[in-house]
Length: 359
Image 1: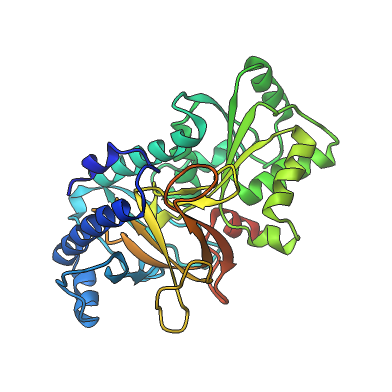
Image 2: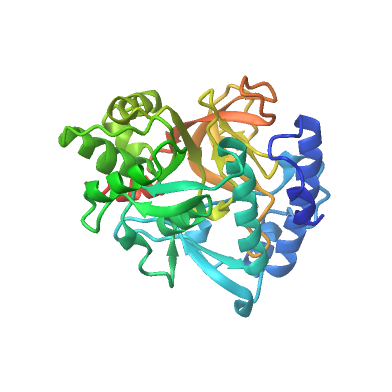
């Protein structure tokens, strides 16, 4: 099955049985592909006695722990085919994941991201205010998760402008000029969760400044660990931002560098959604059996994209719970779920969490 054929479908258009048929076929093909082209993955499946199996269900597709990308170089293409290497965020001394992309995988990541995000903000590119500093993009030779995230979401914006200066302080003259220039138009804001809180909300509050962002859409992502330690809930996050800048449309998203492109966007009902390009399974932490709907466990993420590295079925270090499937009030089909936090003793991973560890 070719990925281009899947891209023709709308991201939330398939019901449970239609999606399971699609995912099983594509993931079976990807498993066979990586078994044949990645020696380390080949040996892992041999060791688990899962090689060249005729998988009968999506839940039978083998998974590998996401931390393996910190331990070894996992690639299914030759070195001369690698066009980009993305690294995960990490605090000082932490090992980082390295994800090797060939031209096709990198292109499909971007195409998929566009399909998903356009379902929430529409097809038109919007003036973009980035809640970050331009300094994060100065070293383009090795893409960090933070830089890759900004670059990925920049495709949805025109007149891309940074709200923070190189000292991570709000650049009020630049912000006011940007808002005046685009007054009366919808505007897109993008930032990582902790940075939006620490460097946007808190600085607006400290400077006793209010700006009118009532016509804006904020997309933010990354870890919540630091905010949870400050007793900030997702609902409290949105309410606080609304208080200082009037913003009402806020979409969180869940994603990771190991499966770039296949993000899980938060809908208008406050639920994270799996598109037709990805899925999640919740597994019991004792025996890795599949949890029932409403039962918390470890999140396994599935992506139909990765061809240059074996990242199509990964066991994460996050806990979550499936809330339902095909019946969210927002009207989008597919599973919708909630993140419950990190597994105990798991390393910090998200852009927000690793940055927040400095505070």
